[in-house]
Image 1 (cartoon, rainbow, N blue to C red):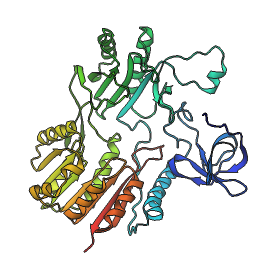
Image 2 (cartoon, one colour):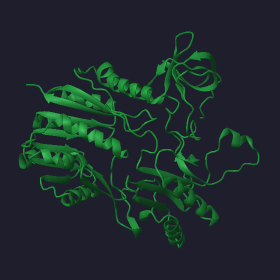
Image 3 (cartoon, rainbow, N blue to C red):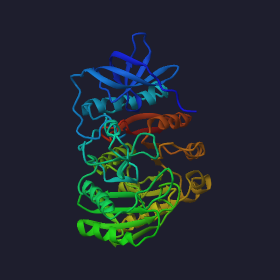
Image 4 (cartoon, one colour):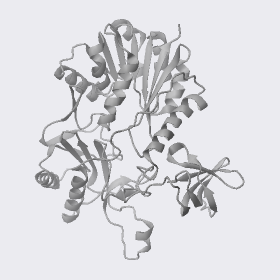
Length: 468
């Protein structure tokens, strides 16, 4: 059954504040809560209601009657259609204030946790072209704007860009993205043109047919570039496309391809085949060098990653004789970042390839006091593991968005480190986990960090100290 289309328009609505999930907050004349997309506090707007819930409405602006004095002109031509960078009209200072409030609300107002010291959010030096990795999707039927659909002569055409909203099969063709520095845009535009000029079939995500699936671009601050193209099947056209791309962009230092004939776009379980160039690119941080392969995880805002890890290390306040456990260590970046101030660091991570990179990175950096182990956290971090490798004095945890498994929290409580430094990309799951840890720990400081300007996402660090 199709969803019933709402035909409700609210006029002269004043936007009051920034709300959750990148939306803004307003109220109807009757006092009902309305969440509005792409709005700025102070706007006076007419809204079309797109979703009606018992406790609130969700709406979209159809007429901006009076713009807020704070409203900025979006810098991206794809604003409002592309799902990213939703806060472009909002001044950056207000974005930071909203993210600080988001962390406070999750920990204190919703989580009912006591926070004695709430440090000001650390902003990003770069608010454009700050990402070092982007993934684009090929689609044989690109998303059409309302204006394009109104043009009877416009037919669905292939596109290369980002998924639109929550639609798995809708891809917006991107002309210029402001997230990743050169040569990211030029490489994407070249690949699209080459494919169209040579009649290569873009993928149909709904019917799972076609040839070209995905394009990954990874860059570093010192000019290294890795490109990975995912194809649905083997073909003589692979070499032609990769040769043309690397000839056009000699700055590409690593060129890979992947054959993906699965029903999803993930490449974690697939072989990445090096076609030309180096097997990896490298990032440097405070004298340390980190290998980044086609599947490696590395913080996508490298400049802010340094600030994030520095804040975590400051919270850990290591004296040099501690045993540190770094849970969800990834490629061991935080582990190695703190290793000079610790006696021993134990890193645990689910992805075997990441642990292989962590070991290689540590060896290349001349670090001998780090050990790394691969496996599911709840299976590896056991009382017997801790007995074998030493009781932790400090634990640093940086779990995925879902947070920590209750079994992991239980083992942490049993291990009883003096401090826990909890780094999170999701303050909601962090608040839940901190509530579970409250059986033995109290939060003594909180440090939000903005990793993704113009989005609602925020990273946060909680320092938890053992209750004596």
